Amino acid sequence: MELKRTLKYLRKDVWAQISAIYIFLVIVVATFAYQLTPDKTRNANQMHLSIHSKGPGFSCLLLIIPRNTSTTRKSFFNGNITSNEEIPVKDISWVNDGILFKRYGNATDYFEKVDYNDFEEGIGRNEIEKKYLKKKLFILGTDKFGRDLLSRLIIGSRVSISIGFVAVIISLILGIFFGSIAGFYGGWVDKIIIWLINIVWSVPTLLMVIAITLALGKGFWQVFVAVGITMWVEVARLVRGLVKSTKEEFYVKAGVVLGFSKMRVLINHILPITIGPLIIISAANFASAILMESGLGFLGIGAQPPTPSWGGMIKNHFNYLLLGKPYLTILPGLAIMSLVLSFMTLGNSLRDALDVKS
Image (cartoon, rainbow, N blue to C red; front, side):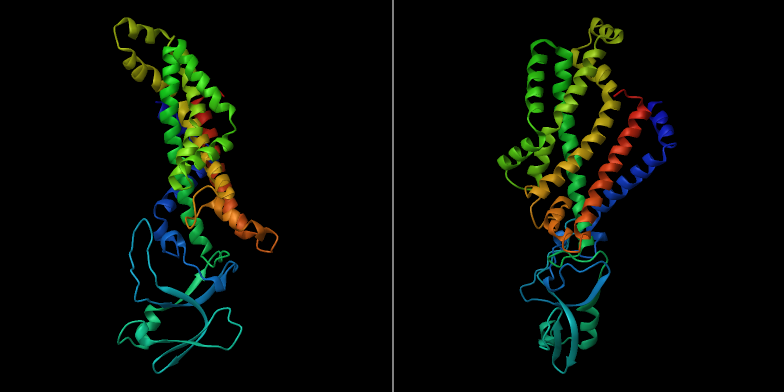
């Protein structure tokens, strides 16, 4: 009944529906990122320094030269690993035994040469044109290292979605555990846990995350753990209050009188009451985790290069706000804002649907 009532309410809230659809699409994009990106190399880290900071809609011809040491490995979820060289070229000329090409950005008339045998033994011009020459469109342009900006944005969504899930799961596990014990048993157990909550709460969140991150070391999963550890106190306080009030209800006391174990009463009769409020606070924590990771990325202690993250992209191109190419910073900023706004809008709608008092 509760689920039906919630869905019925959400069907009337257009903004909640738009937010839910947008979040679902971002999750799908993050999951199948490498199947959607123009640059399918791992972390979309194919650099072309000669075409750095090009605007949206830029296109050029790429000459792909395979190397003898190339070990190409393809992965559906993690992108391709290849040592093939991609050269943006402005002009090419075919000769009997090879190709003459001028690199993009070369102001001189100097042409470089590559032999046909450097591609594959016995290969001809037609095969080279089909396999090793391609016109590439950079829909959102390139970053300061000449990497495809759209590909970096798409793969960067993985960091934001992943840290949201991991942080919420960690905060729920710790928060429900400590909050339920404190609220149900009370006494000195409650006092110790409340003291611990107050200690954690008194330390600025960003400062604590930075300290934990530096202690664990810079890296992908270290950031996830650090953010999750700092977010459990809100969940614990919420669960503690709900458990403490619910355990005084008649049906709970009746269960204890009937001989049910305390653990059974807690799990089967008290904790289900907390599901609604926990869903709402999880949506808010998801948004907070995304903002926290973006802040850490901007400070340089989030996901480390070459892993793309929206906060790191803002950091790398912050100076371009004054250099006539603000979109390099604005686009990842809009990505962060839209995802956070969607989670907050959906959370507020769920709060109204579940009739949870603030």
